[in-house]
Length: 189
Image (cartoon, rainbow, N blue to C red; front, side):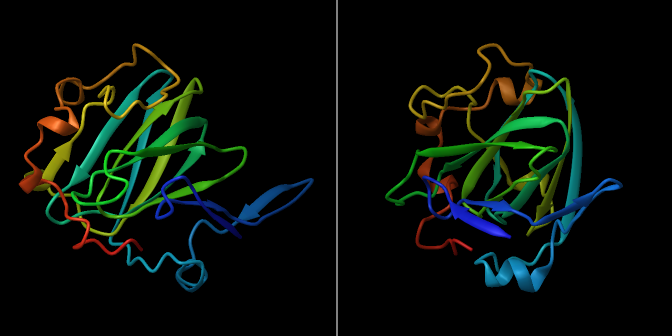
């Protein structure tokens, strides 16, 4: 397994070992001790799965309080996946990093608590899985507008399909800083 920090070093790109032959392939998508040794000491409590079609963008989502860390990957298709540092006081506050994740390369992305997360489907369909460190809590939902000009995310679409809720999320600058996670309070891994 290869683990590479991205432009925001707390966000990790994980490339699991894949073993294949004429019959197909095998890979581990999670083994606690192996990921812990690679710097992801998360305890996961919830698994989620979503299916979307090309051009759908989901995000940018987070929870605060009860922040979630997420290990995300694609079972079928491909997505452009993004993490944004929204930890108030962080030296990289408002910065983003992203990676293409697909069922061909099986790469995963570790998004620590305190980061907003979103993805855009780039294949005809995508089956997207994520492990979460904290259960979903509707009362703790928070989000940032996908095309906030201050973030400057280079999405692969200009007019994505959005949920009604995602279409009206606030820009990061319009969120009361008291509502955002604090840099000092967040454990990066």
